[in-house]
Image (tube, rainbow, N blue to C red; front, side, top):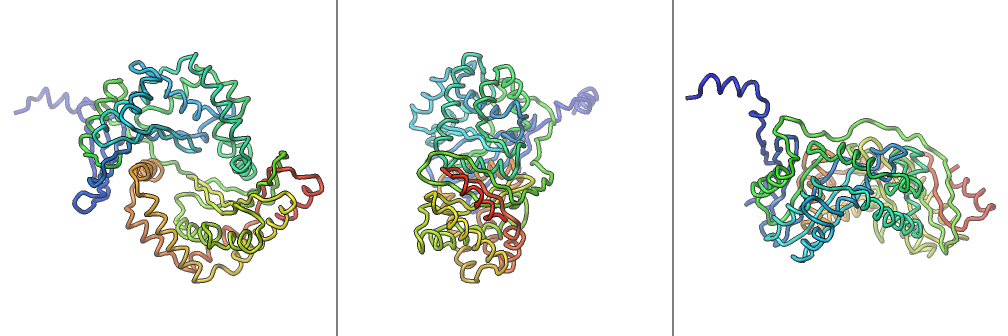
Length: 459
């Protein structure tokens, strides 16, 4: 029998009510492909996908912070912090962190995007407890020392230089700026030489404390794993660091809002002495939550997603004007981009752009044929499944889904959504997206006479 005093304590103490809540999000047959989620006190979410047939496991922690969360003066801070979390904790030096995973033949890395950051390790299933301890220690116990900030500054400046030396990569940053301007989404993830040089250890520490509390984090683990064991090990690691409060704090929800991109007809040129001119012709796309994204995925695949796509056939196969030509989509919480990339000799830029613009205009007005749509649906379904054949890809899927959408979709449901796209769906999204006036970004040895003609490509 419970006394009145203990009942009163339970009513008045939120900490006493804070318990872990576990859900089965996707139920696979015989446990295979089962996705479970536990929300720990303090708002930390742990999501796992169980695959008993494999001998590996990938463990990752996703942070709800990206370069779009930075002020102009903090541009590059998220990526800088990604580097610094590998530099040492109260329990491990930088060498201890890397050698612990190397000693078991594992792989460890991280990446920063515009809306999230992820740290992960892939190991044998028997070494998963080690991976959990190391990655959790990095996320909760980073020292961010002045000397580490100074040393890593040089490495980041070299990374910026390396990116600028690759115009095929750099042109996509230029396109984001062309479309989104000097906004958090339009600025580069790496930051600039000036902003990186200006970042101090104190400012980065404040950024870390603000964005790396449990409410902002999602733990994702896929492979030959036991959900309850992963939860216990994660909880122990966070409690050891004093990073898990016993409270009813709610996890941070997915980003929302509707940002309209009204850019049209903009042209940005960056003169470089390169052998090729690198061009991106594009327009506003769709937010990642837009239900039309499935139809846009089919459209993108048919236009520039493979060797049988329209752009590849017209630009490369029939005319040999470019080695690399493709289309792509980028979806954010509140907006998106659609772009066509090509790398070609500078004297062929205008021919390539005319072909690309003609194809976009034709598809916007007349749509794709039923055969093209059927082929694109088959290609997209196949590539979706093949892209999820390792535990790293599965960890990425469940972690990003929880962080960005707040729910999970099974592979079968994804395939059904792709297969359910109709020709009318594709034609409708083609009119909406491709019917807009495009903008253009170019990097290469473009002369003044050529520059004046490039504006005609977006007229």
